[in-house]
Length: 115
Image 1: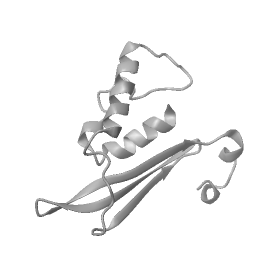
Image 2: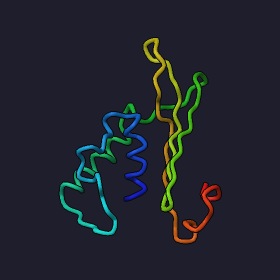
Image 3: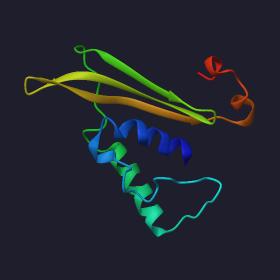
Image 4: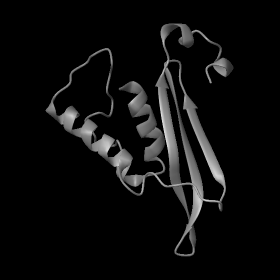
């Protein structure tokens, strides 16, 4: 869940529908796991938003690729984007995204070895 929310924070800066501002999952604390129906509905809505257009696009031969990454002591996430032309304007489109929660051994790696 923490890794999922980490990707959500990364995407919220680029995709307005994905804002976690007034979402019940905002401030989710894994140490105090209180999962209610509001959290469940918010989680399902966020999952649905991740797979609906215009979130994912096919890569094209034109336009630059942008790789955004974020990491913490417990997880990491990445988003691959591409600038694609649409109606005469260049628009950022998500091509792929991934996240991973680090296990206890991986959490002890130095920062540069976590990737």
